Image (cartoon, rainbow, N blue to C red; front, top):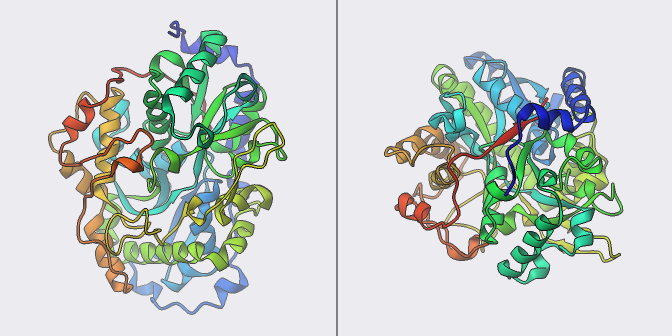
Amino acid sequence: MIPPISRRTFLQGLGTTLVTGSLTACTINASRNPTGLTEAALAVTPIIDPKTLEKPHLTVGYVPVNDCAPFAVAWEKGFFRKYGLNVTLSREASWANSRDGIIFGRLDASPVVSGAITNARTGAEGARVAPLCGAMTIHRHGNAMTMNRPMWDFGLRPWREYNGDLEQAGRQLQAYFQSIPPEERIWAAVLSSSIYEYFLRYLTASMGINPIEEFRLLIIPPPQMVNNMRIGTMQAYMVAEPWNTRAITGNEGVGFTFAQGREIWQGHPDRILAVMESFIEENPKTYRSLVKAMIEACQYCDRPENREEVATIISGRSFTGAKPQFTRPGIVGDYNYGGFDDRKRLVEDLATTIFFAMPKDIAKADHDHSTFLWQSESLWLITQAARWGQIAAIPKNAEEVAKKAWKTDLYRQIADDMGIICPSEDYYVVPPGAFIDQKAFDPSDLVGYLNSFEIRANSPQFFYLQG
């Protein structure tokens, strides 16, 4: 078990490199926002008169990871302009900045990590309580867990090579933890109380390992993950692409992909377009225009013939600032897990990142599509907040919280305006095969689902290092 350590001592022990990186991430934000409309955008004729909108001038955030693609495309291709919007895009240094920018009114809308909206509603782990709302899902999948070179040298390999044997993988991971001092067992995620944190904990707990006892969780912005793995800050991290692909052999060579998030939960939501409830109430026409522009951008990103172009667009300095060789695999779907034995572990699948069309083996119902908000997925996130002690218990009004947080009915109305048919239900039962531990999730029995987990915790510890 990890011995207690003070936050001050822990931060001092990391040195100044990480802090410098955080400051750099903050200072680059303003100068890297995209400016001026492209020729393609200027050529678009608006179908909505800006004068009919309550607030045609919007500031919309994004974070420099692959899932900024719909925002970049809406900007570059003129989808914002098409729906009467004049959008200023704001490059956010971290997912905490993206969330807080909405809450404090600096941003009108921004993507947030799944979990941020419902946790703001419930005050999970002392989060600022705020009426955040989810407008739509930006994308599904598109993230992964990276492990460092020492874990490879110890014998750990990508999850695919364990052939579903959680017990074997757990024995190896436990042996690795026992081989290093407790104070060196540090993993990282981009935001606490988020699906990435839950995936790190869910995965290790599925292997029979208590994540609270075996490693500390560090909070680091996406662009700083690779450098911090290089200097030995942490052994593993969970982040969106391209910051997993960038780490592998042939690129930065500091780690390998252990598992994509889709292997932990197939079909999971990743990013949600968030706004404040007051924004919807005060600007209903503007809200509809924003959601329509983003849906159309997601549809553009999803088409196979556009994906090479999308990977190039988001490589621009204003977006990820990463080379196309880093952004491309997660978008085009030729995904290499890497490794240090000269083997190319390539998996070709467009579902590496899903922007709109759902593959038949992942779709939950007729007319399911990636941007549709399933409220049962919000309920799953609430169970994980309760599982790890971030809330005292599952709220008795959990369904009401999910309904207020994820605006499914309003999404249906907007999609209908665009000729898009949506599923008629708000909930679905996740079949056993979708989760890595083969455990089904029935949203009608949240307490029973929570109690089915042997490994749980009361008070996870976090150490925040973010821009």
